[in-house]
Length: 475
Image (cartoon, rainbow, N blue to C red; front, side, top):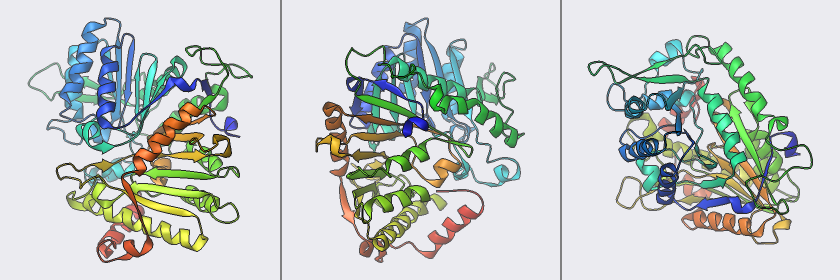
């Protein structure tokens, strides 16, 4: 069924490695960058404005490999938020100035925030109208698919998920996605004069879509025409049936399949139908669904409740951030209300679970307190699906990527992910270890606790949630 929704790439299970945490992610990323010889493509929401070590590592790699080309993609709103003070854009401009012929830096701008709305919405919350949210970190014939951005907290104390695919076909495919998005994004230019701003954004005439700030409707149409063929089942890198094994893998029986998933709002979405198809499987016995910001799309909520209610009654576990592990905990202004808002959404989900008599438990992840010494935040997202074929060894499938599976993800943000399915017991054990490792920092919460005085969302939070929705934003 999923073969009819998304492209398919068949690989070997041993071509997939799973990293445990932020330090390992950062160390692995730097190590692979230093060894790069042909290409580096990094898609992320933003690169932290003080990530001089990461930029120095890219500089070092470019100096060592004369054939190396580097392509960086970030979000324009987040990447220029601090301008004219030091920002992601100003940091990357320094790398561009050193290697103007071999470095390209692109910044995607949502077509949903233009004109008067763009001028009125404060920079701190303008990302609520859409972002470049893809996280792909490709180096030569490897690619890391994650939900992590490239800044110090994601390298130290913000928990996410990280899958490393050592496959030329997989890396080639996601490179095509990366460069397609680059071709519909602004181009960063470094200033030639020390007396002028360090950078500027231009819209090249060679771009395959019109400027989204000038003609958003035509931009969306052109972007959809560009990306739709890449997300079609007929556009995958596999050979005609029967599917071939990745040529970079060893010989043997195919056991593992990757389905790339893509969302370009609001005209293209292969992730949502893939997820609902997976969660409607009558053979699924249990699952874990995680999102740091838990507010699933209504169709996903319906699928979870249906799957875990009689007569199916598959055992479901939800992992989400506690308020004290939410990245917005103690933030200033309106964003400081977000932890309470997500608590309110969790309460509503538990109430729906009770009404549906669904076999679902909600667990909150906490490791210290955000902002205090030893405190971590939780940013992981994904699904682990257990089927009888797994024989209790571990999950037979997982979904990983940038999406938080919300209405915002599918209506406003640009997202890329993957469904990976296997019958290889070694990979199942890796997924079980990953699933158990995240669950180890959680505890179950119930309606009564979330309705209590300490946790209950106040009227200001609920009014703010309503206002954001009414003006076209989303959580």
